[in-house]
Image (spheres, rainbow, N blue to C red):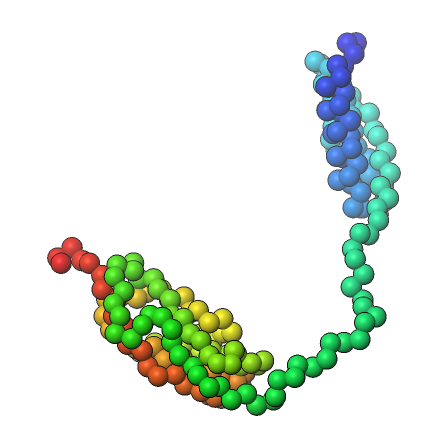
Length: 182
């Protein structure tokens, strides 16, 4: 029988190591079957086949590398923000009032800001032409399906319960799309 060359031996050891690792997740040892092919290559299988030699593979020892997340430090102090926040300003920052968005392919965004920043358990709600487009903590609302026409955006700050705390002034903007006719 012809002896395997160095690269072939390396590949064989890699295959055996891979097989050992793949069965390491089981609690008991597994049996793998090995046969030397006609051209000297090794053939491995997890099912017995003609001329194959059974190899018992023992489980591989493993260690848990997860970091202990239990902390002995005291819990963080509660935020010093008062329970009731009075918002000085709430506004739609873009698009600008009476602006026109050109050829948006139906996509756009409404950006909002408030002073002070949004408090705990408070959310922004966007109303576009009176329709609720979503409630979130982020100050940017991505929009799709913007067809040509006029839109009026109003943003509200709401509590988690849905109670409205503050409402912005309305901002009207226009979407202009080119058509085949125009």
